[in-house]
Length: 144
Image (cartoon, rainbow, N blue to C red; front, side, top):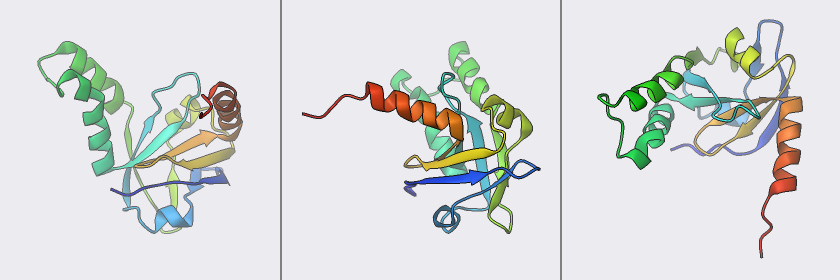
């Protein structure tokens, strides 16, 4: 498993492409999966390798004993993510093209933040990330 960490600020170009940080490009394959976040209050996009995406989907059903194609709740839940997930390719310049519907979902216009999230990468609109970061700081539990 690859571990992604760190923070970078980038901009979307006129075609909706964003350059991935060089440290991520070195270890990423050409084919990736991009999907909407689980948090509708602070919308972001998650970028996975195909293997990490499959592991993430499996983890969504782990507490329920795994995915069951005969369980309508499971089918609906799986469909929610597969319907909105899209395959993207890293181009020769190290950019990915974020599809319009996903840019609209995450309110991405120009300035974005790319954050390592262990087994995947999160891409945020810069203003949304700042709001999320402030919320997280204000509501974090202090260590004793």
